[in-house]
Length: 140
Image 1 (cartoon, rainbow, N blue to C red):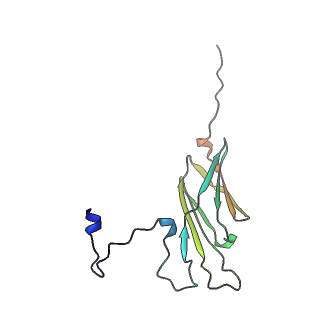
Image 2 (cartoon, rainbow, N blue to C red):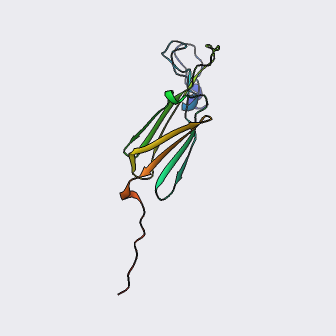
């Protein structure tokens, strides 16, 4: 028998519960109806061209007012909460949270975000110093 199987909790003698993934851990410590009851880490797609980065995330049920998008140096932070469904106060709401390190420096002042049909797209212009520039070679 392994050490894990022999490990018992002081309360009931049963083995410890398996840990949940971060994406499915419930949010605790808040009364029902005041905060989301679950938290998810949405998958994202990152697209890059010579001038900008585009980050696309699925955040179904989130309203534009509930979305917080921030850029700090080379890190993008997105947090969103699902809106309370009218007439269904007992239905669980969720929150989405994601941090991602960006592959290059961006101009945070030029960032723009658009929410369409539950899909959030964040567009970030690269800093001029981070753009690839082709240098012409002259012959003597």
